[in-house]
Length: 357
Image 1 (cartoon, rainbow, N blue to C red):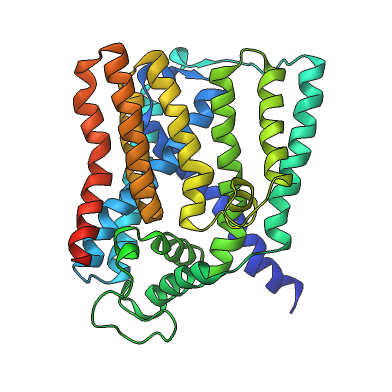
Image 2: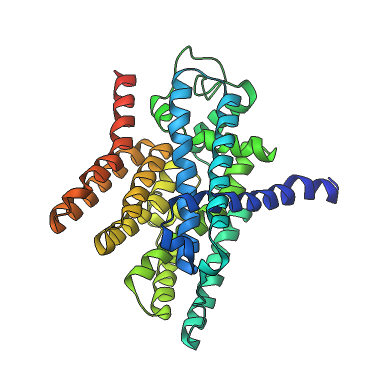
């Protein structure tokens, strides 16, 4: 294989995928409050990007499940999803341009003490090593084979969730009901079609490192809420990274799902969604802003895309977060937002229940 082919087949898809993250960021602006739109610092930029990723996943979940149930073709899902993301990203760009230049407040909070810089450097080295582990190796198991086969079948045959993953033959119905209500493989099918690459490369090599960085981004937001000093925040993240690296007792520990198989739906729930729900719980209890309740709803819907565990565990966590915040602080006017955040988990659970019935 020539050097040109290597570049075309690996580096160019990676570069284009990184460019797509700009669209993710622009999409996240739709979930920003007015003050967050005017103030740009580490926290608001990171929160905007993560919110954009949740919104994109939530949109895919909302349109994919009914289209799969109606036996629509994969191309219809692909183009509808692309159009909706472009609309959301374009609206985010409009919101930025709408602000006058004098309204923007760029806060420089990178003037860290020497000890904070040392800890930050050690943290960066540790995270970079973990990111490169996804480029140098991969883990494949039975669940992974099923998801990759479902995504590949959608690309090759055009129908979704209606084939035996082991043979590719038509089922006549749906083989795995829980994948119908949590169509996580369709995300990788869309990504593969968009970048003109195969599904395993999209899932194992491109998505996984970015997902790992998102996971640490969520932990940084948590640290930002819990600690005032920069060195304390970096020390918290370093501890999390160290635990992920060395505390892999079984195949289902947080360490393994984060560093070995984060592309799997339930692993993304464990590595990203659950910590993000914890962060939103902290924000809601501290500030009780409407936008955080909306983010809770979007995150709950995004969790449903990934697995049945996202539907069940995400719904349970959201129920607990909302019930505590409303009853402990007597925020009765937030009940509609709480019910809205529970609606995706309840709705998709009922769909799954009737499918199995």
